[in-house]
Image (cartoon, rainbow over all chains, first blue to last red; front, side, top):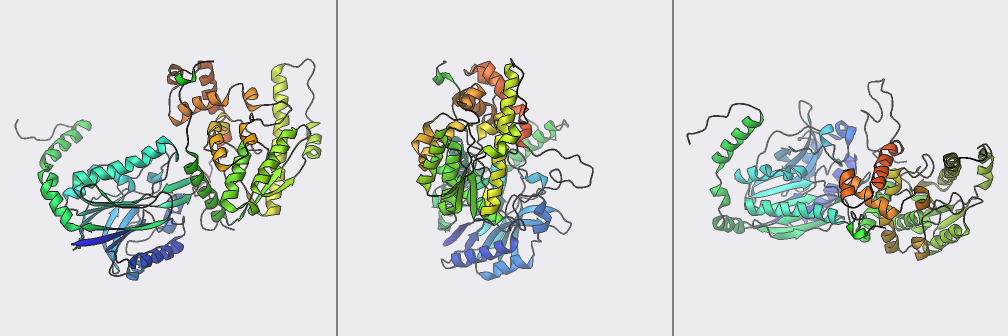
Length: 294
Length: 294
């Protein structure tokens, strides 16, 4: 069985939520002509990235009528989109929603908020506390959502792969550093190597959608890509400019890849958990948790 | 002269990609502020020539006003080179002689007692240079209101880090397109843009007094300054590591001290916090946001 994924590499406008809703609806309708099953928009596509104290002004509930309306623009299509979420108890999160036909069928709150170097996310939003996967039905199956920096922690995509994800979707707002230098190329190559590795080790396809455009002094690099479960590239967007790229995933590839390379089935989760429990205890200066006799 | 092969490397840049990012940045600034036009002070040197080319590429030569602002002692070559840039671009230009504006102020700066020590003469030169730089800022900001244009800055990263610039003078601007490019990177970018070779190849000078060169005044070559700055700043090397890699200790210590001493020029003045919420401390917004457009 085949299904199609469109990566909408857009340039949201900072703080202009209404304009961004309009722009995403346009792109969604444009993408819909190619009959994708899933359209992926970048991190904070509805709000822009460098928000600082604009966070409470642009935040919305995951059930916001505007989000619902966006998904009703193309009710047959699954949408992944980033926005600032305000929870019922007024926590502000950098969230990714999975929407279909006016319903929120999955939600991920960014777990790793980079607050170092040029990043200051932890100053303005709070981290998510859950790593889950979301069943969306055939042909896609089960999606593991994550947001940008979440992918710089291998535990997160690997947990989702072990939790049954048949597709990982990472939405990003990655600013370029040192464009035109070896260091800048290495930063982008780093992202690619990491995605290739997760696809390979998780034996899982990956949809990565990164934004473009400028905010203040930052330029977002784009380079969105779709990878098959063997790590090969199925579709790739250009650097720096807006683009809409579409690729096809063959579900039988996932089946055969996992038969030939049964890494997930062989994973020793209980061993990992035991050793993690020990490491956590040791780092906290606590007695080692009970272990079976050696 | 030591063998440069044994020194820490110069910062490198591939001009095409840097230009793409900077032109996108300039367009972003223009869009976000609601302006269409740009104005710059054009000295005839490589920095302002490069910014002129970048601005013309971003908004079109018709929307760029290059203001030439000679003083009585300014070199003929500066004017010739500035006109080369104007001719190459086909942008608008104006000539405003700052001599009659500056001379009454210079007359207030006391002549030194004879014989004056070198440091006394140096302070006088700095004061005179500051008066000229600030007068040019007044002219540029006046032209920006008349031409309905944003002021594009022409300061580079080397100058910003060693504080070789006048606060509220040449450092005054709405945005800094080459503020993250070292002086030695600028030549490559300038050549890529098609800046006339006479402008690219000549020794850098603030042209504040006859015969002045930047390297003469700073007492160091840009080549060595940029190697030290790139190692200390971009690569976070210690002074000792720079010295071990082949740079003179005197140079590296001078650069490190300059970076620290000139921090005040790179930041907004600190505000004494006496209220609940204070601009710059806990009232933090992007500079360009909804409502900031005209």
